[in-house]
Image (cartoon, rainbow over all chains, first blue to last red; front, side, top):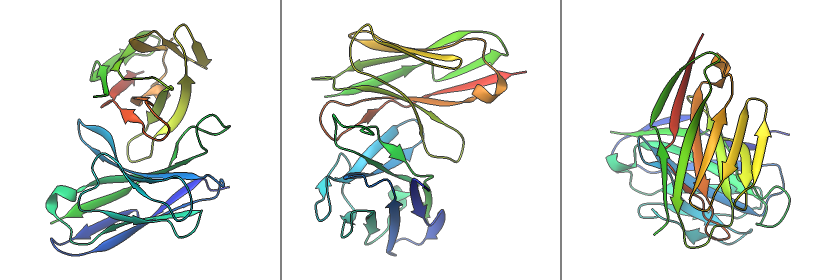
Length: 115
Length: 109
């Protein structure tokens, strides 16, 4: 049982390049989330999904797109990377509130540097 | 607007020196307060969930308490392995967690 895994672990991009971050979970969770973590600012929600085929915007969605084609996977895309997107990205998953495992469980993170 | 403030930003303790971390919050409707531990270069690791004022939970040397406006994480007789950043988050609705910036705890042997 690996929990939540993220690939890649680290990536360097040039401004304007695109990339996709992959998140996978093996806990059969309905909900999945993408956060970014910046120094002194705490984790901020980018996008989330409440089930396969659904996505919704969080607090800071601009410049990002997501897809949830399979229940276990949640992809975060950057179409044209900007230096302001330099951050550590965390994926999380959970059961719906009110159920067991409603706690959000986090992956190990992806460190992204945009030059 | 939901707001979570953690204090202090950093805490340096001697091994065995007990202390407390504070998480104050303003939220329209609290549906859970969460504590996480985060080690350098890793993702947050779940510690506790508290749902109502007066609730307390314990795990080893950690004890979390909740009032209507704040939560405390008490560290009793800490050890160097308790060194980490402790994150507090509140859930105002079904999906969102609003996080504080964290308190970085360093425990010296």
